[in-house]
Image (tube, rainbow, N blue to C red; front, top):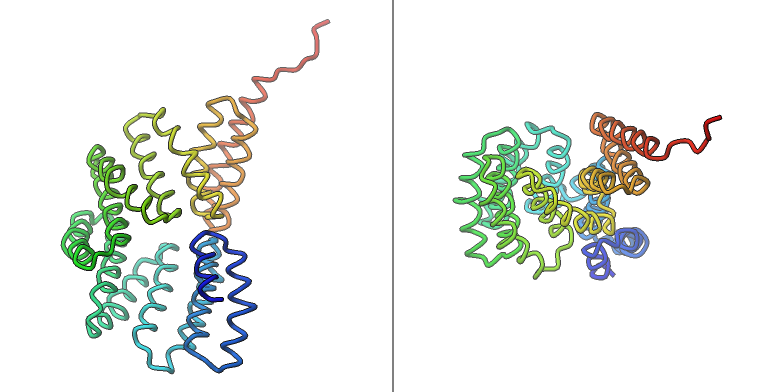
Length: 306
């Protein structure tokens, strides 16, 4: 049943996957006394919460998995689980705490085990933090020198595509828009299409749309944004619904589809609030008021003059 849940989870069918994990997997491992598999399944349940944007529940799940696995001395599992906690901290902006886990609790373990892939992935997480802090040169060096060669050597198409996407992000931040766009369109998108990774396809499409917007090409962006939103909507990915929804709502409003625009923007605001990003939710609320105001102006009172 675990394999079925893995497939459902990868397809974005999170409710079904969660039911299998909680009702058909965990009771079996409890009955068998298989502590390690129980910890791994709890981690996978937490992955579902994280995918939904339920960061508090995800964090509790990852910590529970750590508490179960630590007495077993499974140092690699422990390093992986601690890294997932760091992911949550990183998403919340607790960059120092996340960086400490990466440098002190993950990298030494992967070095000791000779796990070059996990080390490269962790270096990428460190590069994410550096990138968020504006240390673009060092982040780019890590991508080019400590990640890409490893993933090339291992034939890891997925991680190579993820890394190329991150390089495109750095180039975009530097204003090298054409080069960033070429990477996303010619290298990243085809790789994820072949892999069928819908979440990454949506992220890539949003990256392409963002570059079009930065270049002032709103027509091109308007072609891409609805496709990205349709994917995150299907997956129930609240982070995408929040961010991409802002752009889609504005495009719908500009096209005169006021009611649809308001519906999309309201979902965006709710998603931002779900993550505790109230300032962004408030900004979306202002957009909603503006759309409503223009809708009222476009539909004047039918009351006739005396």
